[in-house]
Image (cartoon, rainbow, N blue to C red; front, side):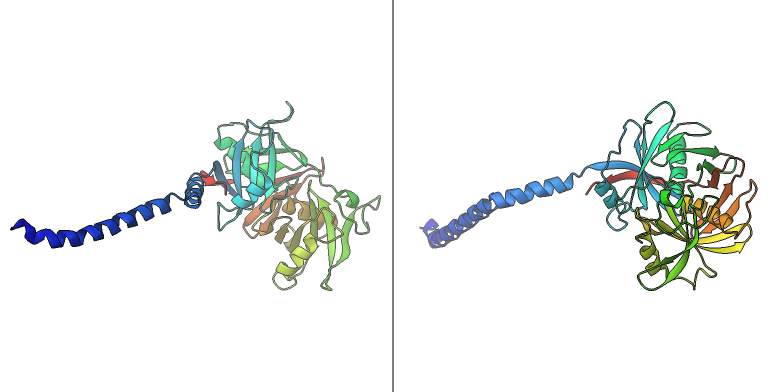
Length: 340
């Protein structure tokens, strides 16, 4: 019969079809294995990371991630999470994370906490508090001044809207060596408790003349004739930061006197390394320069301090012993970042 002519072909196709069905069953069984299901769950977890909202600000290139925690008493991120956010290759990138927190009492408007890029916590940050003040203003906290609680005490930034700068009352400098803290032999002051241009020796055989000043955080100030040729910045900076004479570690400022009203500096920050600017460092080195007789006190216009990222103006006011720092705090961008 005519239909019988196709029977051999059909018989040949049946084994092939059975083989195909067996293969499909094998694939189906493979996709359902526990190990593969586990990998699928991990993939789903990776696809939905926790996000944190942030704003990015900078003060003369010293850049920070700002977090709005005004409804909290403590930072919403851990030091470890903050350090990861500061990674410039795998996350947002920054010199530190700053948290705007609610105040501990009616004596303050807000609190400030900061974690450095290595996860350590400094007492204060001069560029950071200017950025915080601008952040608060941008959030709608309209005020001409803010009383900010920090680990270094009360700090008061004042908004100069007309010129786009912020003046910060940084309080009084701490000059008693033991309170900086610094264990070098005291050699200065009426009570001989200050440390001004005292010899400090490094483990690589070098020695410098070091002045120790605290602005709520420790600073080691070293004056040189030539910033470019008199120091090995990448080597000497970290050796001084971790020198045993500074038990809490220290920020390090190398300073060149350019004129009686102009200082130029490079900074190796405690917990952050080389940065483009350090506000507390600019204050500390101005004090050290005056104490060492390198420059006179300035008037209200302030001493110009040139940092790698730009200029700050520092006044050490004789009438109340307070230091005033003037400079910018600039918004860069905002967004959401994954907590990895």
